[in-house]
Image (tube, rainbow, N blue to C red; front, side, top):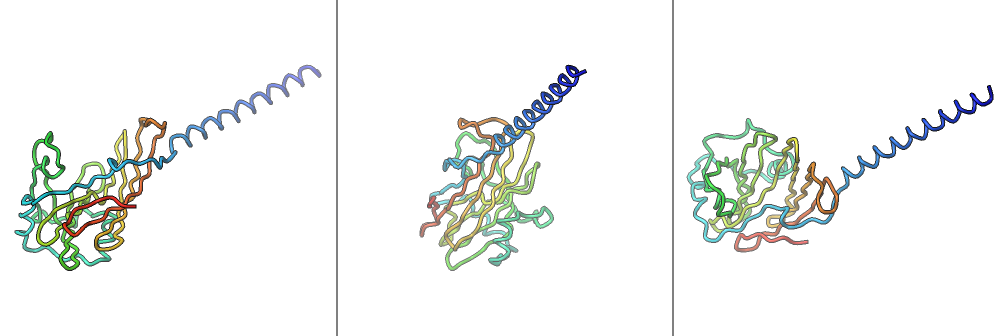
Length: 214
């Protein structure tokens, strides 16, 4: 009887140990998958500078564009744009290879201009690109002295079976924007990480061009 009791005690102890190991293993995997990398590259950020752009001239032909006040502008950059706010007549078509500055791209991109936020000679056009797997993407087109000389991806929120991306932007001043980008992937990167959070700051110079700054 004593031997059987000892065996039962031993078996229960072993089961308990196995359960603890399983729990620890699962927690370890979960932490690994949710680890955030702080080693971010500027390539993780989409911003483009143009020279003597005429591709955006059609914006001036849109007659009913509104001046978006600062509070609404900041809200859009944080929360995105609802599809029912998009006006189909406020659209322009631009070559993809020009818009993204990539000669390998074919076709055009259709974007909808929600309006603009203006400070003296600087206009920030809020351009929306609807997506199939999340909220519409928002690009900010920077116009200085009547010319659009730069743009950047200010808001993104999509998720599919393999990866996700969430970008929000804070307008710090007329020419300074702070961007936060959080992305996940089912594939580990070279650091063995599944997710990454990056914080960038973009500065707009007098010519309307963007550069990263700390």
